[in-house]
Image 1 (cartoon, rainbow, N blue to C red):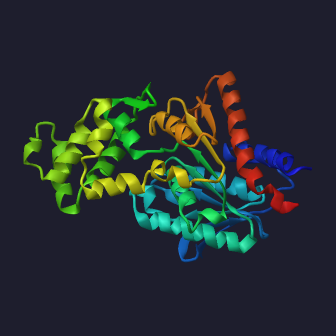
Image 2 (cartoon, helix red, strand yellow):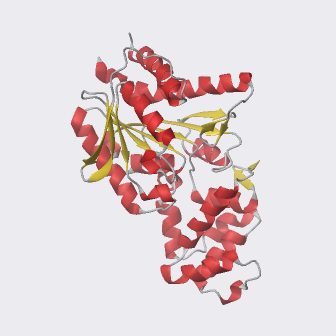
Image 3 (cartoon, one colour):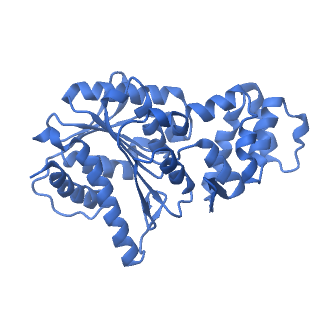
Length: 339
């Protein structure tokens, strides 16, 4: 069979495994999971038992990290489809944005390419997808990446702050209302404290916790971050972000795929839930504007990256078709390796 046809068949099995349908797969290989270091990067290595193309799987801010049951299900499903899957240990699991994580992903990607000779697919969920896009633009990893696939990921941290603080994403003149989950506000508040230099963070955090606090007394960097986070006018968000100190500017630039969009030259497929309560849907629109060649898919039966239980049959069926197509694209990027 042609590689795309093979990939579509495998994608159906991955979808069934990934959402826990438990369908019999008598020809699927036994999968092993071991803790390993890939070029010094600690993580879980899932293998079908032979040399195969690799997928680097990047979860988002999941406290259980690589042990999250959803991560385990997806990694196992992909390994049973004939892929070596590496899930690195990352500080991102605790909603921390650190350069060490990006460096780890780029090193692991290059090392995995050397193992099989096949270019690597970067697959990320939530914030992990954003890190996958950043890694794909890095000169050390870019030659070794076959494709990037994201689900529920952000494209520009300034856009996330805009929606989180004002309830609206503004993209190319289009306004998208956003109803955030309470946990999203907590994550954003944690990120906000990193928008200024370390000595000013305690004062900023205290001011953000106390609605009656007077921001006038804050140091300049903390005041700029406070003004950004307390703003309620979406038209002012990007201008206020430009007033941040060097620490804040570096964070928004270094961890926003929007800042490296011109260097993302590999195929990208991105999927997002229309009513995602943790990452605004407007971020998919930003990606479409910046990467017009990207294949984008919208679903409605998911809460962030989790399928609704008991959703209406029609929308769920349509969304499962979209997820199957998404998985097919992920697998097709490497399927010619088997010929």
